[in-house]
Image 1 (cartoon, rainbow, N blue to C red):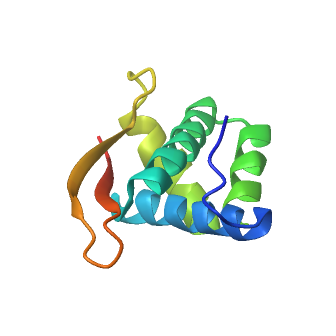
Image 2 (image 1 turned 90 degrees about the vertical axis):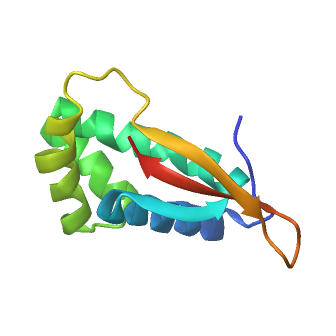
Length: 112
């Protein structure tokens, strides 16, 4: 099951792809708990693709991150080597505080 996040499909997919790119490039992102739990799945999947290292895996990763070659190169060249001995669980969620405007729980999603 997945979260719809009160968005249309293409909007939700763009939000998740953007947050995934940010986590991979910067190592962390601050967002709401629901979005972080959803993005975690995609980050873990992309790093697993990087560990496989095949052409098919590279194309699937490119398709998800909207053909952003910089992100895919980082996944396949750096992150895959860092996590080659780890079987999943590449991210962690740290709870920060409630947001003032709407009381949504903000968390920090970061690579382990």
